[in-house]
Length: 114
Length: 112
Image (cartoon, rainbow over all chains, first blue to last red; front, side, top):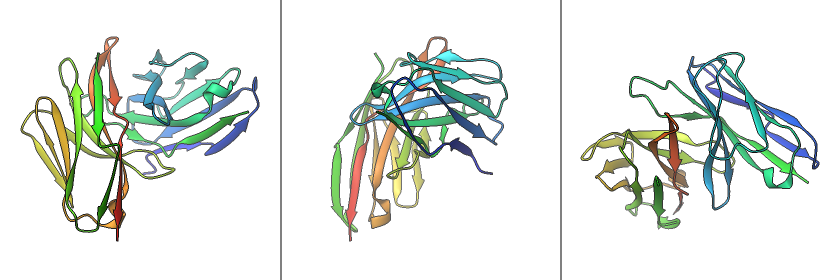
């Protein structure tokens, strides 16, 4: 099993450009999450999904959109990138039930917006 | 407000020197406390889940314990490969669903 994979690993954008980050998991997990990690801020939840076709806002959703058209994929979109979105983005997934709430993380995408 | 505070922010030990990392939390209705290890440039790697006060989990040189207000990650006779940032998180209710609330981590360095 590959677990949780993310593409791309690195990306540099100019202000105003758009892009999509792809997350894929092969563990048949129901729940998927997008976080950003910034120095001194810890991991913060951007959006999450509790199943195929569903999405919901997290703590810091502004400037991002998500889609979960297939159970194994969770896409994070930046509509018009801003320097404040420079960060490391992590995708995670979990079973979401049977007391199995631990989340499994991907390797991350380092995004720089200039 | 649900909150997780980890201390110290950074810890430097000699190989073989045992110590403990602290995770203090406030959450309404703890449903789980999680420890993760994060190496530079990588995603957090799941280590342990603890559900109730008094529970303990062990893995190699690591042992996690839980009380009603805090958790400890004890590191016994550490080796340089144990160097990493250790993250603590609690499961919290949020908008009818669940979310993890993370601490800012303890950066552990083990010198040979």
